[in-house]
Length: 171
Length: 173
Image (cartoon, rainbow over the protein chains, first blue to last red):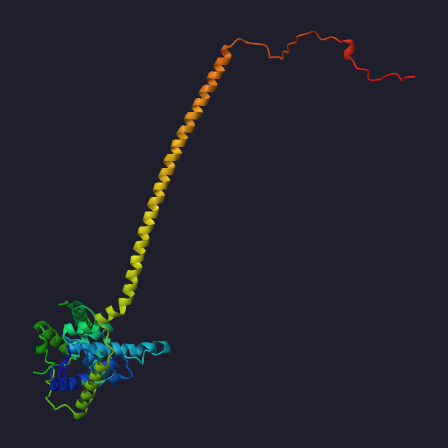
């Protein structure tokens, strides 16, 4: 069954334009965080792949983020054999981008102190504003694992704020 | 309501509260409501270009063959396999029949060999019995001297005058 040309995964054309205007810069920034050289191309390719699909996508935002993540990691993969310095490749949640202009230096330092696994889930949940289920789709892990990572990131953040000790409980 | 509003995704209240706590821990504060600014023309044009590219790819995408085409493509192979299978079954029947005949022949030969062996054993037994009977009879007879040749003579053997032959005569004068 062919989809109507004016129908998009986000609804009508106006909703698609609105979603594109809001998501495109975020996806470019997200690709840069994975060290992608052609972050704009990756974000555009993700949109094309999403629109090209004939089957309905339940979570288009999660699909876009997941596609950008995969494409960015795939772009980085051949560079592993080129003695690339780790300083050049920024970790997720640490690289430069438009959102870093939003976050101040203190927030960036706090994010940098987290472990990369927890930082990735925390970034998607807090900064990107994605739901737990969407993050699980993006990272390809169960929702319970996403929640666990976010709660552990929360515990690490509390440890940063209270370095002298104290008891925190994972809730 | 915007497409990205969390209420549209039916996010649980505990997740919303957790996000707010984390924003406080990070020092991000309350999220700023997004201004309903008009979408820039460049982004709209880019979105349209990407949408057209997606439609073009969808039209030119090489679709996977349907099951009907796969079945049609596999029909000659299936026919060949069916023919080969039928020929194989026929050959198997023939081989089974030949094996049955050979087995029957073997059983016949075995029975014939058993019959002949029985007869041979019976004859051998009879000969041994006869030999034993002969020996018993020979032992029962009185002992005799060794047989010798007896030539009966009617008249006594003597030399007579006419019986010899002059082989050498005196020369005549």
